[in-house]
Image 1 (tube, rainbow, N blue to C red):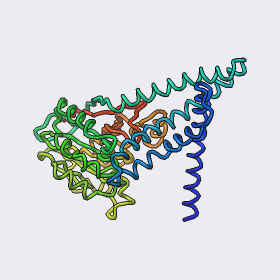
Image 2: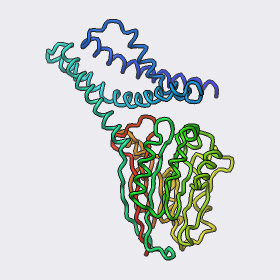
Image 3: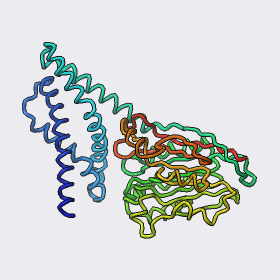
Image 4: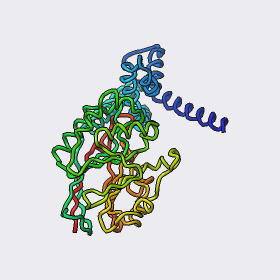
Length: 381
């Protein structure tokens, strides 16, 4: 097992090293030709630091004396992830174009200058637009009808925000935008299906994010569930206590009968199956003691169990996790991984909704997806 781990680690490091060599070589060719640079030593150090910046930032944020430096270093490293991905997509095309231009008798220096400048502008445009998509949330609305009575309620408006990822990158400023959108929406009920924090709970506490979270108000309450990142952080009990203190219950394989009219069901994340000593309950186990003649609204962070949700009479299933790939063309991967990786699906009597999320993981960049808040208007018949 140790040899396998060592081999896997070395293989990953080799791949990362080759990627940075390729990206770095392309960048150096452009700088050498356009600006006449001759010694790549400083440039090589900069590329090496960029390659390590996210890791250094993550390590530094847990050391009290380094936090002020670690935060911007981690942010730079996060953006570097996006540069890596889109560099790997753009640079091979650029290299091919340079080669074709040289075949057409265009001098190499001119070809590199022309193609390199266009590539650089394209990459900058992707990062700028992607950053705007990440920091400018929109509201997506869905209308669903449930063929059940819900006490005296004929309709219900649910506000939903998944994958907020509060931490050193997504913080109070972005969270205030969520509060403002919910105040405009005026939902009867607010649901948060997981990944409220981005692994480490320390920034949530240090920057007083609970003081902003507690501004989320709805007449029928605010409820959350755990996502995989809460489990990665390893401070479940502390996180649940912090949320409870601001009147946001975190449902861990628990159900709540709201106003004797409908149920909110909160599952532990799929990660609990291997990292929680108690595991997690199946949907069938969760609903066994419930009056299933009432509407059943399920929060399950990962949309991996829609078949069972439909088979067990769940009326609305709310999930996140996928970020819709966050940066295209990653959505082609999430689309293969999940029956529904984003949007709405009717599956028998089930209305399944998967959000691309309100925050972001890694780079605060979204291409082919948006930071979003979900409004669900439910009609009971």
